Length: 204
Image (cartoon, rainbow, N blue to C red; front, side):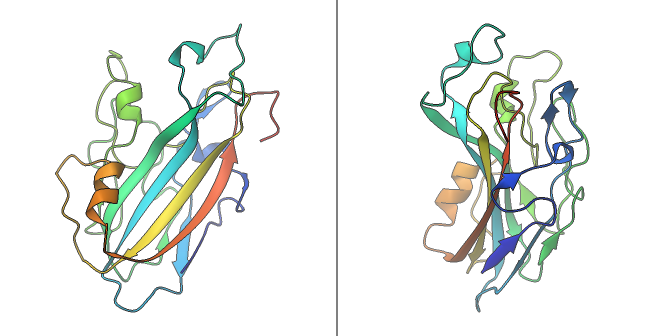
């Protein structure tokens, strides 16, 4: 199975219009175009995850003018998108079709392919407790790495072809729930990734 994007080249920078943040604040936050081919026989649905494996793990260092987050700081995953039950006939997600703009407190019913379900992304936890932004963030919300991070962040879009039409997921699900539910049901996986940084010292 092959996955690609017309919005960015594999392993190359993601344009700011597909990010949630840019140097002067919020960005257009459009989802990028994704398309796939060479789907295995027996595919009954797809699942899609977008994961940043380069999120800092020391919150006290984030967003400070007097500190640069070192490249060698231990990192964790930050989920930007979790979608399940994408129909077996779907082969493309158009740019901006699932997200187009920043929605304070999160999208209530994010757009997506007919019948697909979209889970919570990790902005749900990041904005928790924020009076203006706190809420359930479902669907796609793009890159917004700390401006003081010396590591260029990578964003992996991972598509899974599954042998079941519907995953056993709770109503309010996460990427971890998707990963558990699709165990033993993956026929194929394909991935594409882009990079993004808000640090002037980095060449994104």
